[in-house]
Each structure stands twice: as structure tokens, then as C-alpha cells.
Image 1 (cartoon, one colour):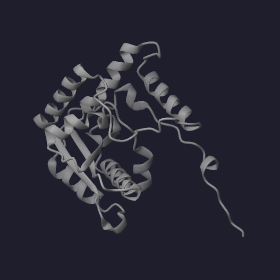
Image 2 (image 1 turned 30 degrees about the vertical axis):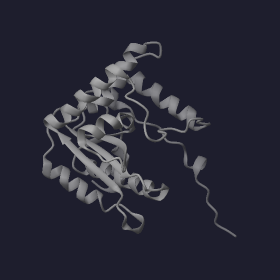
Image 3 (image 1 turned 135 degrees about the vertical axis):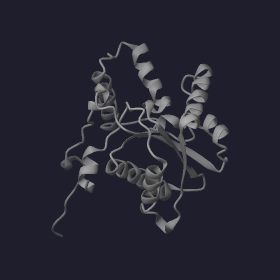
Length: 224
């Protein structure tokens, strides 16, 4: 698979098969992803890999926290800007509606939507869970590096016939994660990544998010 194919087929998968992924495969993906650009070669990323009972225990702890606070808590950073403007606000709304439409959950079905939302904290059934953090002293440049590292993981997963879902939904559960994985306070828990084999029969995996046309966000200047 070439890079263009990996980019074209990468998407957020929200239903996985239970098929295990070999540790050697996970290690290869992470080692290769670490070649992502890193200003000053700081390599600011940290990753915890959870499989089997370790993954299940984090899911159990997250659900226990949900019994106290359904949203987990307050994340250590704004997942979205507090006052999101257009066109970004509409884009976020439309992708949410499109996702729920694939599984026939209308807007008024609050219970159904909540049940699907809770699947985030089950890693959508993926057998591999990655928890990604970054040193708290890092600034915008290093957060950009982290983003490129995450993209590298997701593209490499496609090369290995696997799929992913990057999940900032895990950020509000940073206290649960920190306690379970002994993550020091010097690290900000950024996101989770579900990794595994997509369930091709699941309707929700038919969702392909739209992209704005080139003319909306690119400016070409050819003469002085």
C-alpha cells in the first residue's frame, strides 16, 4: 500500500473485530511512526500499549468513573475551542449527524446516542488500546510534532491491514488513566487510539467524512 492509498483509506473506525494483533506488529508500527518529524529531535510523545486484561481493566475503571460522572471529568486542555465559529461549528455538527445516521439513531433518541457515545470508552471493541501523552512543558511546536506522530501511527496501521480511531474522548478520564498507568503529573494525557481489524459489516464503518474543496483553504500565488 502506498502513502496515497493509506491516506485515502484511513478513517475513524468505530466498530472492531476481536481479532488479536500481534505484539511484534504493534512494536513495528510504533518504531516506524517514531520517524515522524520532530523539531529539535525532542520526540515529545509517550505511549502506553494495553491489550488483553490490561485493556479490559482500563475500560472497567472508566465505566466505574462514569457511574460518578458520565463524562469522566474535565480534560486538561480544550478538545475544541470554547467558542467555536463558522465554518468549523457546522462541520462538527454535520459529521456527528452523519455518524448517527449510519446506525439509524435520530437526534431525539438521546438514550441511543449516549449508548453509542459510551462505546468510546470501550475502544469500540478494538483489542489494542494506545494511551498517548506529552510532557507538560512542551509548547505548540511539540504538540504539532505529536500530531504528526499520531498520523504516522494511523497510516502505518493501514499498511499492516489494520484500522484506528484516534480518541480525544479519553482526555476527560486523565485521572483514571493516570492512577491506573502511573502516568506522572509532568505528562498531559492527550488521547487514546483504538487499533485493530475493522468490522466491515458494521454500518457505522461506512461513514466517510467529507473534506472541504481545495479552493476553500489553499491560496496559490504564481507571480509577484
